Image (tube, rainbow, N blue to C red; front, side, top):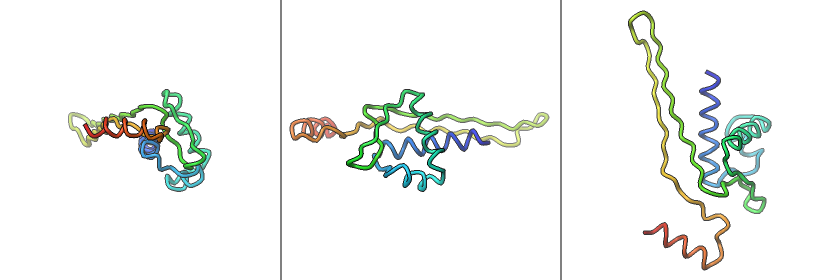
Length: 118
């Protein structure tokens, strides 16, 4: 079940990065109840999946430099004889949202906001 725990940690990390509300690595590790080393390992795992992760020192947060989505589908069945004893199936799908990070110049920002409103 360690793999399920790790997948859940990746999903939680992804959500925090999408919200651009991670804080420093030390704070983020504390929020996720993992060590800093484990946090860096999770970030590296996302990067091996081609996640475009950067850290903004001014805002003190990790963020995605472009659209990135992590979809998690898990199905577990425990079968004993001809009986299914336990079934767990889950799916986590979120709509793709774009970050306004780096688009704060007035002309860029207004163009992006109008795109989101439509």
